[in-house]
Length: 221
Image (cartoon, rainbow, N blue to C red; front, side, top):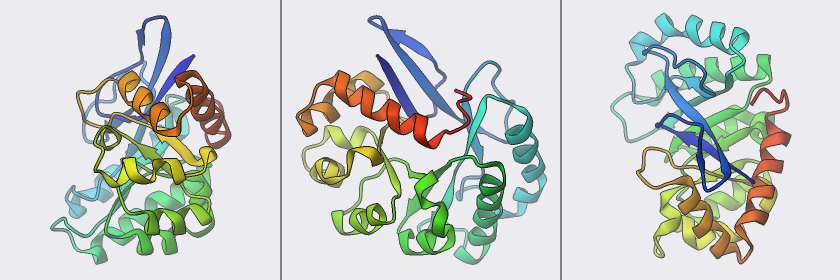
């Protein structure tokens, strides 16, 4: 069985009790690219907008030439950061255009901007993944109907979180699991996610692996 960790700020892959763990590392484009590491690459909306143009060419070059770069992101929109949406949107649009051109999935950071992101992404939503999803079902339902995908992390471990309340309602072909920046192991989050859906951890692993293979169509992982 493979544990696929869709989004992590910690280096992988690793192994746990004879189970393979494939980690998509969230590489900071402003830092040295980690060798021999599967990663996503993008510009976070928290980062200074004025610096983006200096790094777009790096994202472009790595996405084209490095087989370890398998997704664009995390990128997106955040209404709680200091940078205005007027500055965030063209940066996000540039990364979306790159993802579409190279047929790479998008790993999305979205805070209170789901309507804006949905409108911008349009038909590319089926190849986009809202990471660390922990919002209300009313939002998830609208996104799900447009075939968006969701990655769930440590919020599943809390019985009172939005994530744990709606996780069972998300169609199985739209779910991923991640650790993000938490200290929890991916196997712990898989175990909790399987418990919530009342299936075995192995069945959940097969679901996530199937989703991964469908969206990451070039098979470079």
